[in-house]
Length: 440
Ligand code: ADP
Ligand code: ASP
Ligand code: MG
Image (cartoon, rainbow, N blue to C red):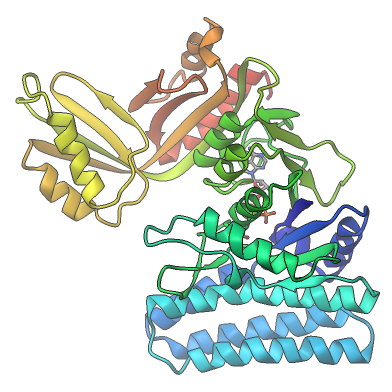
């Protein structure tokens, strides 16, 4: 059995949904199809939720109505018979009524998760309606019945496996299953999600849970490129990556994959393929345990980073100093991405600054604390990067004219990271594109 995940742009227009139906019925291998929300929907739902949080019900209502209008146009072209149009209209009615009811309830974090879940619930039900019109036999699997996270928001892979296996067993003769990406249930049993872009993570977790033959991530580009195509003009697709390389790229900003989406596939050794819905015959990128070759494969960047420098004259003699520093971050459940040390200071970076005030207050006990916001981590990723003695000099050569605030090298054989100001990020990506890949 394989898993096929389709992102928002692959479902963004009724015609795209028609194409997706062709792709999922192209062969007879049993499959679980994971769908994101139609592109733009989750953003719209986030806006609605934010407006409600601010108490602006009038604008929230306008946004809900506008979204509903878009969906009415969508279903008109999605299905053609009156019967199916009526079914699709009922689906819209059910979900938009829900949003309108929420308008009247006082806002809470839990309610906002319910709002965000509507996108995937809608896309899967509408796709299922279209498949029914085409006479394609399938089963709609509710993700909220098997996709669970624990108290630390970590997916419960064992539990997911048990529940999903039960659901599949109840439909033993079925070949095609459709389910929602992104959404899940948390430890309190409430509707929750796997964070933005989380459908990739859903797909990988499902693939791991059922020991799938492959996890295919279908999107709007022909695989992982060597650089961010939104920023750099000339980028090229990468044929093959190891799990480690792909995980580093996803974690350090390659938007094509959710940051955590590689580990489940890696743990259960399930090949991941990045494929293009707009060009299904393109080879895309294959991600598996072995790297195809040594050397630098790609660069990626992560925005919105905060750098924290703790300067302490006591550090020189104080073993246990770093432990105390790390404990502060642990207490506020804030992961550290980069770290550099000297005799008198330690610099770390974080991308979640929700507890920055508390963290700063506690760090000030150890010495002076300096904060730099709006930084960017640019990562150069590959396999055994250090194997080529020239890589480091090429990287620094490429960074000419850039103020590099931190460098991380040697932490793994797959990554060199530099910290620059957010304003310099695009320029750094461009300079690395020419310096490392000869692409202009
Ligand atoms: P989906 O809606 O299918 O989940 P995403 O928008 O999340 O799609 O991811 C695909 C997008 O990721 C591409 O359109 C591309 O602009 C962006 N992207 C960023 N970095 C890379 C990269 N290194 N390789 C390929 N795509 C990338
Ligand atoms: N719809 C969700 C989002 O936009 C999940 C996803 O697309 O992967 O973040
Ligand atoms: Mg995505």
